[in-house]
Amino acid sequence: MVRFPAQGYIPWVGFIDRTEAGTLLAEKLSAHKAKPDAIILALVRGGVAIGRVIADTLQLSLYPYVVRKIGFPGHREFGIGALAEGGATFLDEDLMKTYGITFEDIESLIEEEMTEMKRRVLAYNVRPRPDLKGKIIILTDDGAATGGTMFAAIDDLRQKRVKKIIVALPVCPPDTAENLRAKTDEFVVLHTPTNFNAVGQWYQEFPQVKDEEVITLLKR
Image (tube, rainbow, N blue to C red; front, side):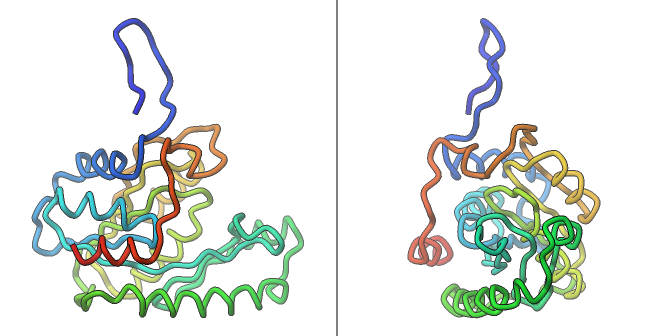
């Protein structure tokens, strides 16, 4: 990561990779090291690479959490909502109104994402996850744009009566940070750049994380 050199200010331009981002997040979360009631839930797939580093550093257990983005019709990378594995659904109603999108317009997309979500839940079930009731949850990903997937996951976890939800992110835009801070018990974010377009722009190395890599990271 570019920092402040002795001869002048150079603005932050991003993380080297997910390993560096996870290492820096772990430093911010050090108060939770080896807590018996704390676990890490990582959004798959990219979040698992971040979560693995945090888990190893803090001596905590790591489990996957499957959430699927509901994309804008015809432009799927632009999220207008999300589905979480426990059944919670988040839809950005203001955004849908702005673009004139109805539920009928995205119904087939939701069904498609539900099918993929079920596949991933089965694929990443490396070991049984403990009952989440009463647990301190550190929920992480490699970044957030609109925050839709995080909002769905948070709503999902609230239904499970967890003790505390901590969202830990390397990067997200300022408005998303403000909204996430309001919905969580504790919010940790390393950077909130105003010129945010996509998560990947803030990493020098940002390869797609494949299923096989996720499973390997979870088995470690």
